[in-house]
Length: 274
Image 1 (tube, rainbow, N blue to C red):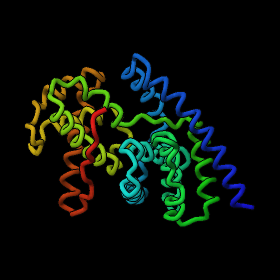
Image 2: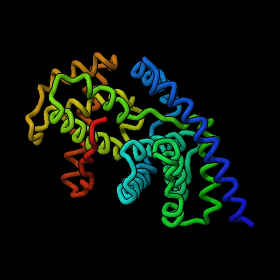
Image 3: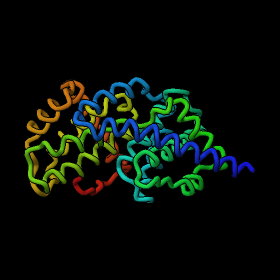
């Protein structure tokens, strides 16, 4: 009976969450003012983020690593992973999640992110339920709790969306833009692992990631002038130069630190241009 009730509740959550998120997504993604709408949504969602408590920094790191591994194992889109991390951080800010519930919140966040971002309602529920050490009914309850505390506003804006909106405007051949996308995604993933960047605006992280990608000598097609990318992206998003510089510095420090510790588990994703 409990399983049947959980299934019925899950179906109701699926339908309601999909309707809410797709309505907001359509307003932002298919309107003529795409970047303007993204910036407006970013401001609304930024209000529900807060600095991560010191005691939760290692717990959050482990949860992000877990989310990334599940996303890669299930061939989920990059945006699904970024979206799940954003939801998890907002939930932590909303209710101060207990340490023993961090993995459960991460699983619920990934379920919601799949419904919003994955095609044809792909949810990976069975896999997530198997990896989260709790009964499935508790996972469904946590999903409902996350939706409740988010006010059913679950179409978070992430750096990935800003990167995708900026790439077509760069004066570069398609191979170079694709290389920039791959490297920028790497830096965005790195930012997801760094708790100090939780309150940094996604648009700022997008500009910082593109700037670092542009100066990356590993781009086989040849690096673009970093200043050109930085100036163009900053102007398009009205990004604060000081905030972008701080984000670039933080990402460089995080990259160096992870490499020194031998914990650099991130790998660039390859995705085709839209």
